[in-house]
Length: 77
Image 1 (tube, rainbow, N blue to C red):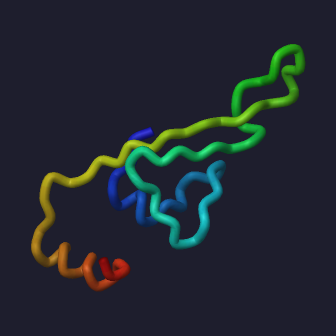
Image 2 (image 1 turned 90 degrees about the vertical axis):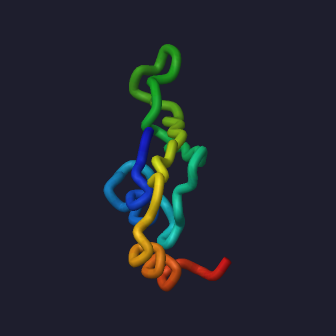
């Protein structure tokens, strides 16, 4: 799944995947959701885990004003 950098900071549009408030999805992160995957063998009503790997599209550059705003709202390095 490909996400924009903004979506990683404000990850609320997916209803299936639960995250901790304030959690930032990073490039390569993997999440799993029990009961949302493929049906299990010989039991089509029981579903396994859905595994999602996130690929974050980082911007090539940032405007200085945007970079300053990010520095103010993000935790210190």
